[in-house]
Length: 177
Image 1: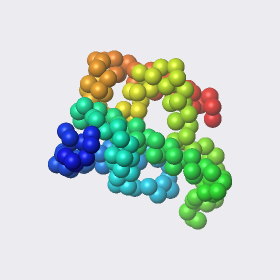
Image 2 (image 1 turned 90 degrees about the vertical axis):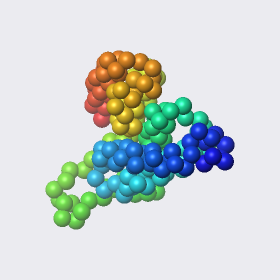
Image 3 (image 1 turned 45 degrees about the horizontal axis):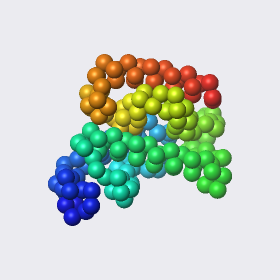
Image 4 (image 1 turned 120 degrees about the vertical axis):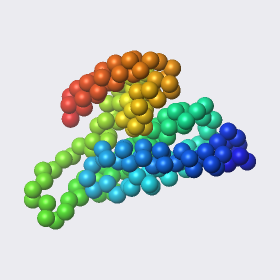
């Protein structure tokens, strides 16, 4: 990657070293997706890396900044997929279920990823710092220490923002369901 513009400080070795963490981050995020999700964590990690590389904005200050960008990219990928699933053209009005479970499972018209995204967009408008904590922790899987370093705040501030944001998002999602 040394020859690629904007990647002068991220060699192929650096990317190979960071990839397992990127893959683990994708796995953590996929654990929260709804049943029947066809996207695998490896594919999410690859797609995120391809989008990050092709975006042209690849001047990451450090590993925490790299993973923050990856978290936002993964979030966008999952939201795009959720929106596509809801489209009638992609059978968005139908729910995939196993034949044996078809009679036991209640119908759910709400796409969890879209509900979270809509609430997060509202939080972004009212409180961008707390919204960034959610993206970094929930979508990025970063620790409080990593988030604090990326945002240049204390770990205690991250803890307070995270507690507030979880309660705020929960209330918003319940209100708009």
